[in-house]
Image 1: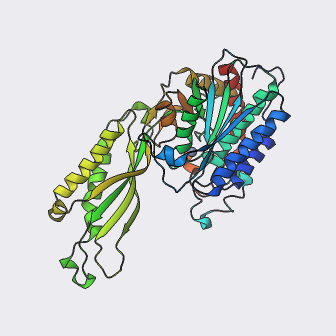
Image 2: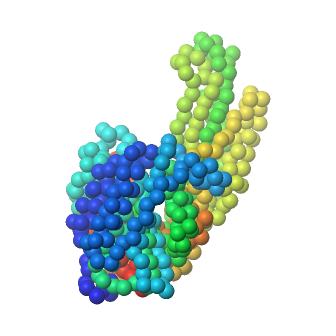
Image 3: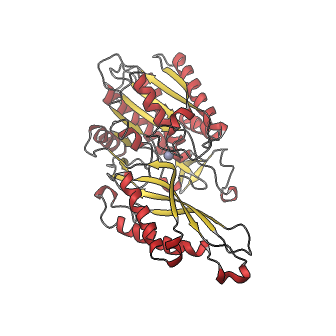
Length: 429
Ligand SMILES: [Zn+2]
């Protein structure tokens, strides 16, 4: 950072903030989700008086019912009647470019508590694989990255450097189940005359650069059967057995769709997975089940139109049913619900990607890798609806996201803050 004053990240302040955020238990659809948003707005208002140059804070109630009814709404998987939008803005002196940092504050549920070494929402600092780390739900995905971005904004403020451009830091809700928060943010920014020229999302990338995401569509399969007493099962048709030919067709579809993938995706064994996450069938042990419901996740290729992706899966299911004597007359159906993540892509040669790569290399001595991630994220809303060049860059490995004992190395939090502070100054000067 070229400073008026030399400003280093304040490690304990950064880690304390990450711990504080984890303590909110901001699981999507729970009260913690709105509470963490309100808390960050309040913190930003306090920063205004403490740090000199003012942070402008704007909060609003997201009209959830109105927004979710729109045709291009990306989907929502948990009950949520309200959500809070927050925009923190460090205004420039004018004539510069606007950099947006978008970070989600919602986390996924902790899963099996017995698999954790601790309470997931009481973060602890401990060594993991030899590195001092922070462990807790959201440490990696992505309250750690958000705290690092917050620290970067504090560093820029404390450096006293006058930037021409604006820095906009937006904590958002509801990323994990569809993207309501970023969807509403894009609306609000448009209405407020904020037009970001580039965006960084501090999701866990292990400090590599992810300028593209595969998409993910949540689907439901409804597979019929014919109920009969289990003692005479040959006279009925099991919905569970009817899933088999359909599942086989989905495995084949996955193979075909992964034959020839974009080079940015080449590191992944399966770039565009198709996976069933829940299966429920029947209502009685001694009854042949007449209905099976499976919910799954369907990967969308980079650049692929979601409508044609959906058509491929529907077609595979229809063909599997057509070749089965009973399913031909009683075909399974496919519904699309919940998160509908298109894929998204920013040119890896774009300025924000290259600036992050150069800055990160200077700080770490290692050139970051540039690749596409196989999961959907808010990136596709920012590049799609928002038309904003967007790249993910943050601390932590996605292998630990959504997992028990989720953790992030403290050194990587600090490096991320330093790199982001320099990128902010360079981009907005
Ligand atoms: Zn995330």
